[in-house]
Image (cartoon, rainbow, N blue to C red):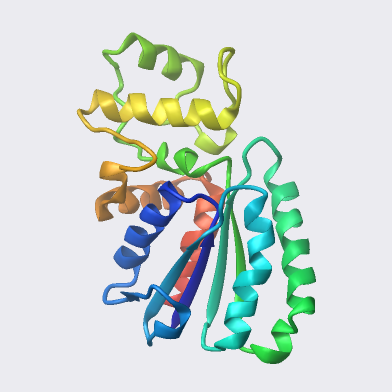
Length: 228
């Protein structure tokens, strides 16, 4: 099994996906170049943000047609401020157009392509750790956030943002940082910290299994489960 990931962000996603992939598939080996991919190996390429990652789909496909050894191609992006279905459709269209342009089906007939949309961003998924948000937070800021929307009881993917935040994404990230800080932990785009650990991923997996929450994450986890 050889996996190729194109992730939207240049900082957080490459780090988180690297750790999560290795937790999910013990023994899998990371490659720096597609030529170095071996059985039970994976490769992560950075997408340069949105919309640059749209343009890099074709480049990734060209790589795969030149070295036709990849079994699964994952394109992982944020929905951000648009509905998940709209972002998914946008990337599905781009996948179809680029696949036709590079003759992907003809040259890589065994390749499976998976578009994964993080709704609204990867921090939204990370808010799904049920035990990280205290029942009675000490921080006044966290109390306000929990009063606005309790991510331990409600689906983080359905959370909007209060006044004072330009985007949902900025609020979700701020909420995550505050929630983890209350537990004596830190989070940043460059140093995600505790969210990289296997038990954090296990907690998110349990949340998906026990509720109807985090459906966009569940799609990724189901796909990985099928590959194991």
